[in-house]
Image 1: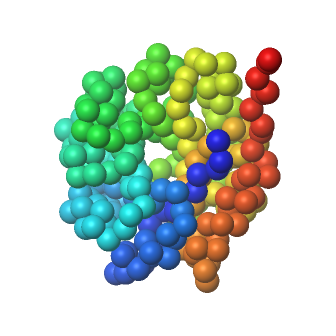
Image 2 (image 1 turned 60 degrees about the vertical axis):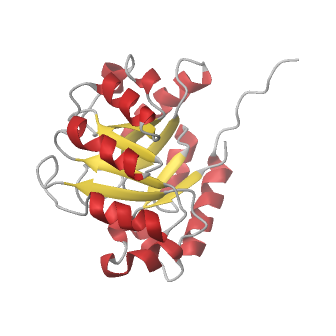
Image 3 (image 1 turned 135 degrees about the vertical axis):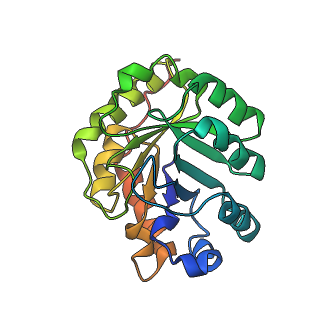
Length: 227
């Protein structure tokens, strides 16, 4: 599949979110980081702002819930119209029911893993999910340095997709720029969350296009089908 670019509004101007969304109209998804100052040591926006964004942009909203008790709150984001709702493996109580409920509410279901969380512990759960978000920084703040050692998780997930054991989009989030997107694409990521590498540029739309082009250069080709 072609690389998906998901600009993170965590790096946008919160006073101009509608304009900031319009500036990346050529993106594939718009990534929305929801933080509660409990699961992570930061507080950002929540459901009311997501509902407003849904009225202001046609981009599919990719809501990343870095919150405690997502079993209670996540479905509301799906019901509001979010395209993909991602919960953290470390916070969700009943991950399978969570995935079922998100899908029933009309959203794709995503599962995110912090850097210290082992992919192998979640293999039996992942068939119920549509996206796997591998954090390449510690969640909670933008502007952190990319952790290349996390790409082993991406590679393992990609192999399971290629062998048919999983059917999902492999997403990376944290420290993605024109250099690190090469490594992430080579490892097998499909979707790339980028904050300052988009909104820190003079032309965010052009930055999205440049990231997509760079990822496409390094995306491994799928094995050819046998006749």
